[in-house]
Length: 403
Ligand code: RFL
Image 1 (cartoon, rainbow, N blue to C red):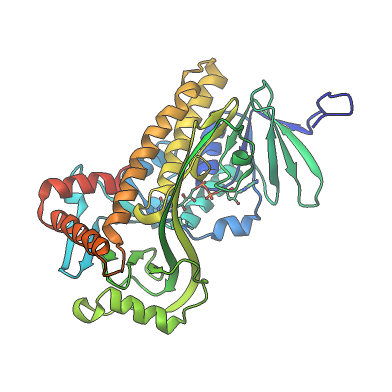
Image 2 (spheres, helix red, strand yellow):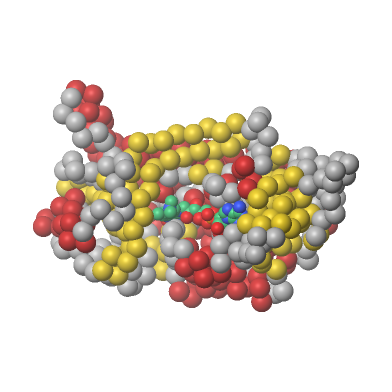
């Protein structure tokens, strides 16, 4: 903001790092910074209750858990999370399980709902004196290529406020202010995978001790444990299907059919307590830095949930950026900041590649034309390799549980 003579208006608040967004990325970053005595603030558009109850991810990779442990942020997930290491594929050729703790590097997931992780991170940050401004929407990042970038913010009462920092961390997701404030030169590589899922949370215990992936002519169905009382299910649906379009009975019947419950055992039914429609899309911005503004997590790149990588990448990038900011702000070493974008992108693209491979494994065209039939035969062959080839399984395990 400038006055009538082109002078910058004075900032209302100053800090070292302005963090936009209180999701996994923003809160991991802010906790690490605060631990090292770096002054920061987290500006969050939503209210606290919303942030702590937003159900999304649940599968944390072993590397993610190690990062959280290294910063003393893993107590809750060790107390209440569950180790998990099996996935099951159900197809027209039967079913098979892979115990990935016995394959590749032998790593496991920890199943811990994202909202519980966010709640732990938030409580720890606040308990240590961290500052989070809820119901505070960042509108734009200004002067990102200058010495003192600023974030203009709309407070709850609509009042405009300016925050100034040395750096701004854009952890505010796909529709946030960080992305909106980038200059034209930033490239966005985007892919719409043409597949839509109905994402469901059922008040029902998991029905199998594995992540279930069902490949069916009627479309994909997925089963993922969350807690002993809540299970996530996915059903592929037509693009444009409203979240509320299917009755609970239809949902369970369709899940039974696609998961082949008659053949492999019943699904434990319960109330559907949450539904959302997820269009499988991916995008990556390059570079992830514009001057003093850095992109982290979903704001850096959106990844389809097919391989459960999004929250894991968010934590990994937050750790990379935190270390780089600490090096710069405590010792004047800029190298970490200079390489942040390239290092993060290397991880992001490997995760994108695997996610894309998973989409091809789990979905196929439903038509009976030559191309659809060809595609489906390829998919069948891919599943057969996974069922029978140990080297294929080792490769899968390392990519499935790693980032
Ligand atoms: P988040 O979690 O979206 O947090 C961004 C925060 O920024 C706030 N915000 C703003 N604040 C201030 N000013 C603004 N202008 C703002 N605009 C937005 C928002 O309110 C929010 O609080 O991003 P972050 O931290 O980058 O974390 C990313 C993860 O949330 C995401 O990648 C995962 O949830 C993806 N994902 C999964 N990832 C996994 O690793 N494992 C999984 O099992 C998994 N399952 C999933 C998923 C995503 C799903 N959906 C909803 C697409 C399942 C689903 C259904």
